[in-house]
Image 1 (tube, rainbow, N blue to C red):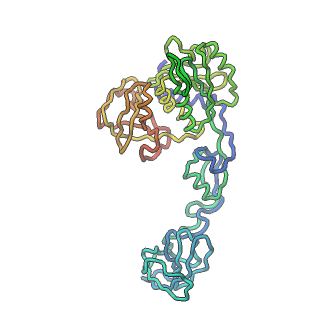
Image 2 (tube, one colour):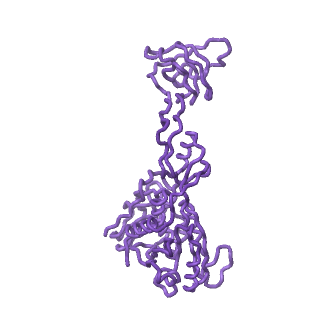
Image 3 (cartoon, helix red, strand yellow):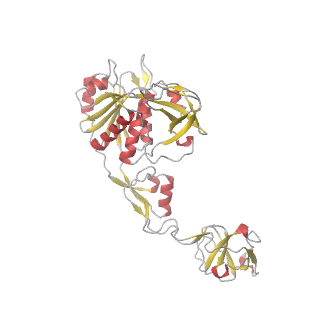
Length: 425
């Protein structure tokens, strides 16, 4: 069976929505612990933001009765620092006021200090000496932040399903909210197999390689907000692997994810162990990452990614990460951009090719070749370059679609939904 990228994206999302025991169970967390979690409930504003009329600038508060008649020559009143309730302002006076300070009753506008003559505040007010200031006329309401102008009491501050990053947490803090109810995290059992792989930090036996996939996918899942349980099934014996899978404690697991053992080779242990299960082993028209497995083990969703590290991460980015966004509300979708290609490329017309790239200043340069083992090239990339089905080449200077996999790679407006990988069918 050969599927398009879009068809497999839809299948993975449907599997998790249909079969996963993930629920919108919630827990209360302090704001400091809620970063990159998803709100479980609507948060109404408990009060007005700002809670009182305040000054937008360092300047002079001017009485409403003094406005509208041209330039002003006013006696300087007592200064208004932030954090106090000031006395009412008298006509004919101008009170030095600091940014964020409460507006005195009677004030019609604030004139910034740089528009005043002198353009600096006078010496201490309580010296017994009268000081005067010349100011231009001002429109009523100038440089005054009105009470509730950012957010009115009782209005919706943040809706359920909001991903809590720094701006959202800052808003809640400004509203006086100390803790929030967030959705439970999605739990993935990450299964690694194979006698030929060794744990990093140990000594390699002849014919062995280090297990990069588990660390690679564990980090990607953590960055996506998931909880990861690592499980090591050492044997390449399908019967022993089948017994290990059947013996897993799956009650609190939302997904089982494995890498390797799903292709057409003679020793594809995952494929052999699950041959009588509901898991389908198929090919997606994508390079890298063509071999894929999807189904369930018992009542727990199962996904199998290819064993080459780049294939595994591309599979995660193309299929699992977008499905988590739709199901859980986190992570945020990848930023999709149009970028200028720095060099020519070729692609199999029947496949959606995903290349690694380095993006900067509107252009993307390819890093490494098409090989799915090129981890060093992956580590030097900050973008995935998409060449859709039906396109066999692109020239230097052509425009291509990229996904930023490093948010610091460029400034862009995040996509409002999972970036499209629409293909020519």
